Length: 158
Image 1 (cartoon, rainbow, N blue to C red):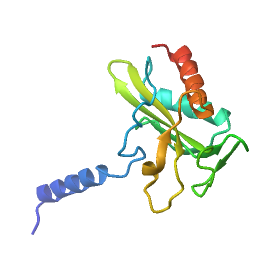
Image 2: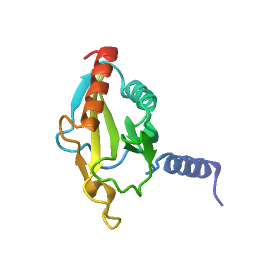
Image 3: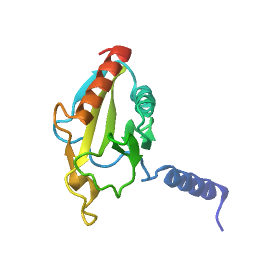
């Protein structure tokens, strides 16, 4: 027979296990090497919320957004048609995606890495991240991320 104390302990253990989930929006990988990084005077959730709204205003659809985890990922975007496209796109040198990684820097700052990536090849046998390269400086995708970083600096300061 199980007493009340054991039953209560079992309940606490079950709740603790359920609270610890491996499901997350933010991927295990970080930004590509060479991704622009800046420090802003705001918490990561506020920066991510503002960034997502800014990207939506520019016509990019969101694929994943998590203020709690400090992460934004857009759908693939074709700047020629000005539409978001799915994974199956064929324009590897033109269609890009924007990702942002915001990490807290106590007491009231965050470090924001904002990347724009292209696919080198469209190979369904390769994991998506293996196909991606950072948009080169001066490219339209890089210019977009640089403009957005300037706007975020103006809004939140350094």
